[in-house]
Length: 401
Image (cartoon, rainbow, N blue to C red; front, top):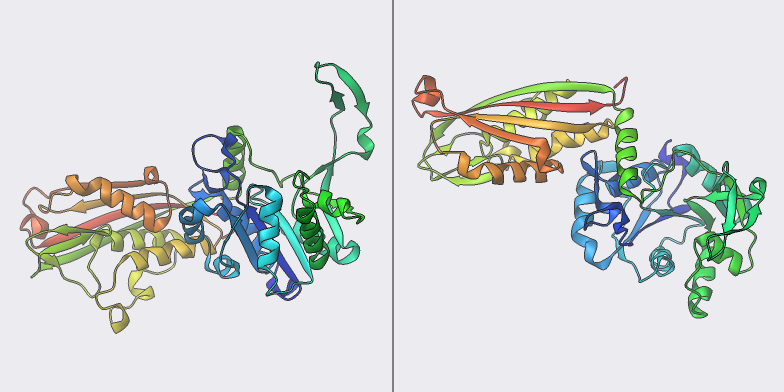
């Protein structure tokens, strides 16, 4: 779905991600927990970005650092659609209101309000939401209920059997004309009404008719630990093209007092010589990813003849390769690097190097391997003339990429 479907003056999105959501397990709010190597919220933003509309995130005041990690996991196009995050309130209603107020400078005609824990809204669902808001002014997606629903009393006994033909399980994004839902939220706040379950209910409270449009069975909300397992399978299912790329790099020693290895500055009696910072491990990893993409090598993307890259930090080369994977809808499954040198000793720095590479690539550290070996005194590395590095990158791409 191209961006022309939604000009920023017409549509904007409020992304609600301020809840603590700890039922999914661990101490991290579920929207920032990892699925297949990326924060859940990153998947949500990528999916919403297909509409091409500005996205107003609302997060917990304590989650600014976590949101930076989300931004770094996005493709450049999705990141550009994200407005600066606003701090949410004590309730979902307060958070939505904060997001709506933050959009006043845009003055959109319509707004979609979406929960961060629903990370797979389809392009078709987003377009249905826009069309429904345009036609009805207030609309929410719903799914027909297939199970029989019983109303149960406090004593555990059935009090009533509901007619499921008239029931719907409600989802997000919920869509409205902007001024309608902003005024409804402001009025609810003024009257201290803060216990309504969703934005559709707020519109109903304010006296508006709310239309139900067709939801999407794949638009699941992550709540329990088992949901993460299921979503990881769903996210990986479409990435059936598994590729492995190989990288190799060499740099000679020259005058200096440190080397850069895997993005970590390590004291040494010599430095590595190169056009950039000569980080032999990051160069090999970059080439491995580019090889898996069949997209040239590091020299074709960052020519050594270009003075812009003289002395440059090599983490930007690796980030560029990772961004190319994301632009093609893929993900990095594993990185494996081997350093070949007599000195410096890599062992004492291994954990720091793995952590730094994981940070650069926005990966869990358990998806990054770093090893080191000597060449038993043989060859240029054995003579301590330089350092070599080999690397492998395993990536997953959508079929047909």
